[in-house]
Length: 107
Image (cartoon, rainbow, N blue to C red):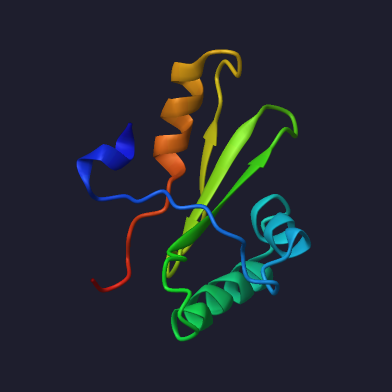
């Protein structure tokens, strides 16, 4: 998997309450630039609240074709990866690795 190489970490935890499903949907699915900016601001703010493991956000949508979406704090846009064959583990794994946010926080 992509996180074995050391440049990516995958850690799941409860997201901050301010990062709502509606905000993520508006930023990623509706591609609302204002909401993407707000999402980035919230990710930056959480650095100072001892929630520094939030380098980004990942989401899944099944609109049209199953798609994984990833956003790294500070990036200009989210990354989108369509899952070619949702029943094939390799296909899901490839999409996952394409959108997994980079580690951008200081060690």
